[in-house]
Structure formats: structure tokens, C-alpha cells
Length: 237
Image 1 (cartoon, helix red, strand yellow):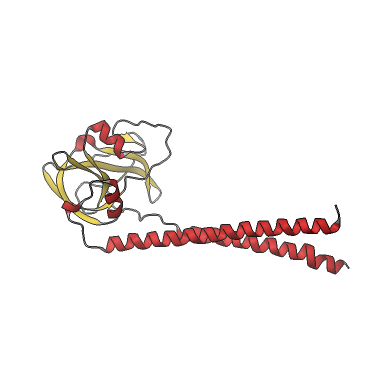
Image 2: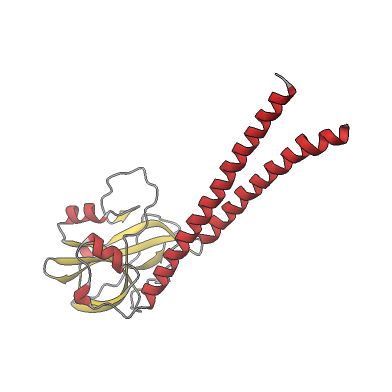
């Protein structure tokens, strides 16, 4: 291969790598812009006045539009269907997220994320005792999607102690007419649960960090080409 051909191949490879890394950097910036728009949407919904209980969504599309809105509802707890999601951490402490269905009216139920409780360090299967008042109660809450899923080898979990909970599967299992959303309880209650709910993870800064890495790699490739293909040969001559 001639020296001229080799130089053209090196130039083509350099331009290809630079184009690829620059494109990846631009893509990360676009992802950051999308996440910033999502964060702005979350903040604006949280700032809206509380939603009326009668307006709580009954279908998945409307439920997505109501996420992060505050709402006040009343109903009866169904403690026999309480679920404890394990391996949920708060401040590096292992624990459970406690979920209990709330019957708003006969045949109308919503799943409530009631709060977090620490795990028994000596017996991981021991669930906390949570006070659940009988009769009609009123709670203040925030509309939220179902709890985040963790990796699990079990595809069909049963019983009160679980790793994940799928709303549709839980509705079929219990026969409850669940709405396609859940509520995160906000008001104080004498049940011993923590309601310090983590903010939605938007991770904007992570995308900016990735973009910087790709642009830095693009600049490094360009600098290496200039040094080895232009400056160094001239210095040798």
C-alpha cells in the first residue's frame, strides 16, 4: 500500500470516528433536553391545586396525564390485601414499601403506597406491624405510577411479601377493580410508616456528563490525527 493511500485511509477512519462520537454527544444533549422538559412537567403538576376526587382517572391514558398531582380521597382500607415490597432502601437502610388497596366505593379500588418501614435485620421475612384503621378514612396523596420494579427471578409472585407488584396481575389475583394508577400517601398518620418519598429520578446531569465524554473523545481523536499525521512528520523532516 502506498503512503498516499495509507494517509487517505487514516483520514477517513479519523473523520468517521469523529462524526460518530460527535453524534453521540449531540444525542446525549437531546436526552438531557428531554429530561429537563420532563422535570419541568413534574414541577408544574406538583404546583397545581389538588385534584378533585371525582376527577381521578379511570383509564391509563388519563392516569398518565394526572401523575404527580395532589389529591384527597376517602374510603375503606382493605388490609387483607396489604403487600410488602422488600429490598426498598431509604438512606442506605433496607426495608419494605407498604401498599394497601383503598376501596373508594363498592367495586372501585385504588392501590395506595402508604409508606416505608425498616426491615428486621435478624429475620428478613418478618413484616412490620402497620396500624390500619377500620371504617371510612380520608387521606392526602399524590398520584403516581405503580412502584418501580426491581430485578427478580420470580415471574409470578404470591403472598404479602414480594419483590414487585404488577397492577393488572394483582387485580386479577384479588378480584379487585383497581384503577390504573396508585397513590402515594402524604399526610401524617399514626401507623409508624415513613413517607419521605424520593423525587422522580430525572438524571439530567448524567446525560451532560456523557455528552462531555463523547465530545472530549472526538476532540482527542482530532488532536491525535493532527499530531501523528501533520505535526510529527514535519518535525522529523
